[in-house]
Image (cartoon, rainbow, N blue to C red; front, side, top):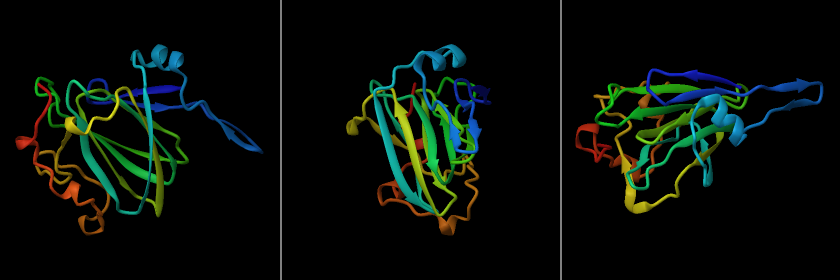
Length: 183
C-alpha cells in the first residue's frame, strides 16, 4: 500500500495495492500488522460501521470527546463521496483546518483520521455505501459536532448547498468557535 501524508499531522490517505485480471480484482482492505508497519500508527480497531446514503446526503461533522475519542479508517465500497477531516485539537498548529479526499469504489482509497478530528462526508454519486473502523466504542454522551457550513472552516463540499440533505440533528450543530473541542 501507499501512504500519503496530508497537511494535518496524523491524517493519512492510504492507497491499497490492487491485483486485477480478467476476473476482476483483489486487494487487502486491512491488515493490522501491515497498517502499523507502513503507517507508523499503532491502533486497535474495535468496531466496524457501515452507512448507505443517496446523492447529496451530508453526514457530519461528528466526533467523540475524550475519554471516548475515536480514530477512524474510512472507505467507500460503492459510489463516491467527498470525505473531510477537520482538526479540532486546540493546541495543534493546524487547528480549524481541514483535509478533503474523494473516496470511490474505483480508487479504493482509505482515509485515516486520528483522534481529535471532526469527520464528515457528502455523497457525490447516486448512492454510496461507506464503511469505517473505529478504535473506540461509540458513546452517545461523548458526542460532539460542528456545523457543516461553518465559514471559519470554509469546507468546499463539491456540490451546491441546495442539494445537501441533512438529518435534523445535523442542522443544529454549533460553529467551531462554540463547540466542545479537544484541549
